[in-house]
Structures are given as structure tokens and as C-alpha cells.
Length: 247
Image (cartoon, rainbow, N blue to C red):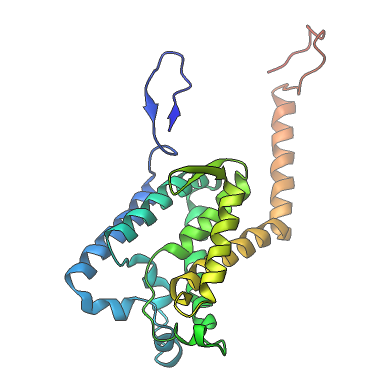
């Protein structure tokens, strides 16, 4: 909850701001699929992620469709709330196209890593093979990581009670996902959570070191400096430079 910065307004607003068209579409798609699967449970094994079906029956669409299915009202409410709270601000920074690309890459990548995780020669991994994995948590965990990288010291209320820095919150959630995925009964969803964190980190890291990104950055910086010179924009001078034009 935050207070309006306007001196003439005394109202309060909750959350990161208004929901964009892209977020409305994502939330709407999840709600529609939740209603469909609630009325027709038989479609869940076809659209949820079942690693053995992806590997042996080549039902490859499942690594994408599982993201839009949820197992209960609290599951979808908390995922969509997190999508809005962390996704809205990231979309404003990145733009809609990059935000959607990140969302689907992390979600699908988390699904693919979950399939690979099920092939590990351990009992806690074998249990994942025939499990039906559903939920947008792979993408949500990816958004959490991105949010922590952009706003590392911004407080997040863990369990809505304890304010901790975003970077610490993500570290805790990542550790929980890691150790839970190694347990006998925790490898199903937590492997996907961990996959979302890993894919998000690799995606953001590759974007930073991509040579084209550096070229684009330098080109935009050159254009901005050129416009500044054209319109006689200065960076500012000393306090006693009263005659220097600063725009």
C-alpha cells in the first residue's frame, strides 16, 4: 500500500498500479482454463504436464499448456495475485513484448527442465514422471527472480507479515524449492519452481552479455546525446553557473 505523491490527494492505492492489457489477457486465459477444467476434469491429463507422456507419447504441447491450469481456487488466486504484483512493474520497465517473451520462456523452460529432472536416476525424480504438473508457478518464480534483481532491497511481506528484502525473499524461496525437490514427496511442483528460477536467471544473464544488446545500447545512447546537442541540452554545471542553460 502506498500513498499518492500528489499534495492534493489523500487517497491510498494498493499494489503496483493498474493492470495492463497483456496482464488482463494472461489472467483471463488462466481463469477461463480454470473454469473449463473445473467442469471437465478429464482434460487435465491431456493439458497438464506429465513427463512420461512428453517423452514417450510426444505430447510436447504439455510443456506450455500446463501453465494455464490450476488445482484449486487458492492456487490460481495466489498465482494471479503474484503475476499482477510483480509482473506489472516489470512490464512497465521491459515493455509488453519483452515481458510476454520472458513469461513464456520461463514457463515453458521450467516445464522442459521438469521433464529432464524426471530422468534423473533417483527415486525423488522418478515420482515426477507420471505426476500431473499444473500451474503458472514456473513463470511466477521467474518473475520473482527478475523483480529481486531489479529491486533487490525493496521489502516483500513474507506470509503477509514479515517484511524482508526482495533478494532475501527469492533466496529463501529458491532454497525451499531446492530442498523440497530432493525430498520423497516434494519433487513434483518444486522441481518446476526451481526450473523457473534457473531459466529466468539464464535468460536475463544471456540478455546482458548478448553482443547485439550492447550494440543497441550504444546506438541508443548515441542518438540520445545527438538529440541533446540538437536541442541545446546540458547536463548541468556548478551552483554558481547562473547563466548556463539547463533544460
